[in-house]
Image (tube, rainbow, N blue to C red; front, top):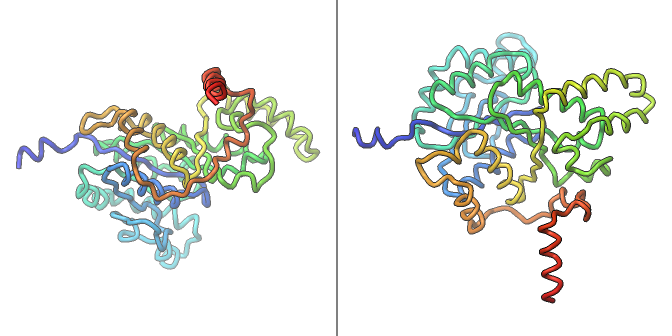
Length: 319
């Protein structure tokens, strides 16, 4: 008995998946659960959203066993937003229930599928306090903040997304990975004003402001937008990782970033170095269809690295 206790990991690693409604959190959790399973990790998905119904993934812990949004709205005569705030406060007041549920999975990797209400991560404290308590229970978590990539096609919405992401990062107080989701659909919303790298790396936003000033409606708000851009760039915290949940290379890129953020790749319980992870990924039989990454469409030839150009030259010479 003592040897088993000594072998149990001192830390439990995982992700808290947050983001606005419709950003693809539940789809991400399902895809990441399958992806990690193919890599050989034991994965537990925890549904933290009391409004989630008909979950598409195998859920080990479900908050609906404790409280549901429909019951709160009906019993307390609250709307969906107020009801969701109450549910999170109720979970915070009953953390012993959550602790008991999570104790059954001591050596698993955790995916927490969280509600989509933005106020929970920018103003209200219940979710933040729950995350803090998880840290006290030796969870090492990274926040994966999903944002729909179609906002890149609208400069005004993109600036709004940047402000929301920055506010969330400062309020939640976890290692943070911002993700542009649904990259396979980005072309449906029109051609981007700049290359994709401009949006993922959040480069000089003055170019975006100039583009925004061409719109007569936003022209009068130029000074306000300029100050918002200054706040974002002064903090210099917000960047994005593009994600197509159906593409294994894209999922690998996100997972590598998250594993660095929560410290999983530095653990010693099993081989967690990035090289071993990549080797396993290459040999795994994934259940994803191969799709053309949207990012490649926005990378020009001039942006190739010297190494890529040398490789192209070498291939052509052999031919």
